[in-house]
Amino acid sequence: MACKVLGATLVLLGSYGLGLSFAGLGVRRAAELAGLIRGFTLWAGEAGLGSIPLPGICMEVGERIPGSAGELFLAAARKMEEGCMDSAQEIWSAAMAQVMPKSALRKEDWQMLSAFGRTLGFSQKEQQIAQAELTIQYLKEAYANQEEKNKKDIRMYRALGVLGGMMVLVVLF
Image 1: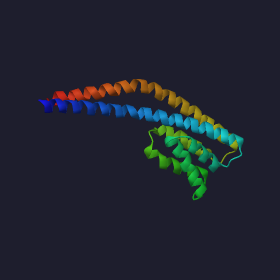
Image 2: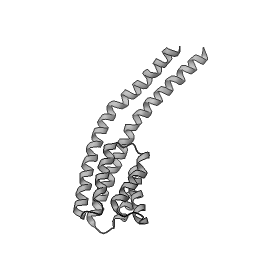
Image 3: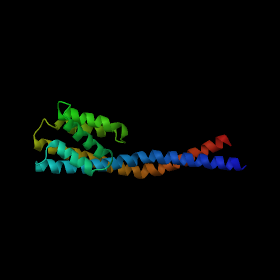
């Protein structure tokens, strides 16, 4: 009997933990979006001053932003300093490809970040800043939507985890 109770407890705890891990994906995305908003805001401010070259701006922003958002800017800065690619757009795309597997961002988020990268090095400073501001606007909307979604999803995934565990217990016992 004690083994059944222990097994049932472990099944419930495991299924609850699985529900929490699914809920955590939305929380991670919201945190990454917040980091990107801060990063692009800093980037636009530094670029507007015009006193630091592009690799320096990316390095400074990357060092000030935690998580995958900071990693994106740092990877771009390192690749720019290496000078192994032809254009800033290629460098930004390579940095995105390096960070993407570790990120919780969605495909549409990466598409918007890619659109920002297409302006790097090809357009004037004002156009790059305007594209950064457009990216910030998109990221703010995505962040607000994700926060609203998280409010609903966290409760739902926790409940689904517990209910799924109970269903497994009914089938097993």
